[in-house]
Image (tube, rainbow, N blue to C red; front, side):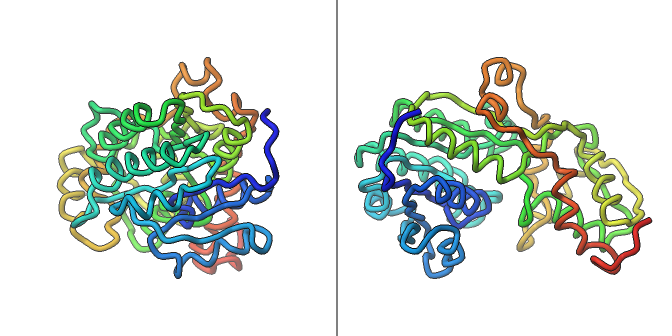
Length: 321
């Protein structure tokens, strides 16, 4: 462990997001000063109470404007890229946000003299993936390793937590639809708690060594997507018919729904579901996972019921079956 002065600064791009907020809290508990870089600091005030007064600062940064990214990295001991893009729309493209944005952050961190760079990507990132999002992540990972030698990549499986877009989205569908189409019912996922992802990144920063490695993060249980839907039905105490959806029908559904604001599924996300989303055997063997980082991953079954109860018919007052 490298001994750090108490005022070491960590810049977190996307620090007001789902994973970013949790990371800011983890870093604050460790005594770091945190600079949260985001497009709309005026809307990110919720992160300020996560630390002591003055410990967390908000700065404006837009990945399209290198000068703002550079300014956000000045004086930082470590830089974390926790930005992301679920769906491409208009000028918000995977190439522009994921690839160009990651390269801009890596260049700025290098120029600013930061010692560490961590990028949040995802399991399934591959140049050969049918998903444009997964290909963009793989391209970004390769680019930052060249720009910033020693840069580390964190690849979580499906991330869950109170504000997640996985279990909450399933529960919303369960509440309104009598029949639920299940895309890729046998595809395996390894849900990982957002707090564990944050602890993993904070641990890498604590260690103070840019390993240049990719860390795959998954929870203690591997389940199929059909199992996940059934679990949500059990937690919300509802009965629904689960119908496996052929890939061709799923792709059509994703193409049609993808045009809607806040689409529940897009064609690219259907492509992403064609492959299992679990920690590889190699990562486990080499200690590039949560246990390898000294973190005991928490199970979704211990946490998800604490925020899905509101989807029951009478919410918290529903009588258990």
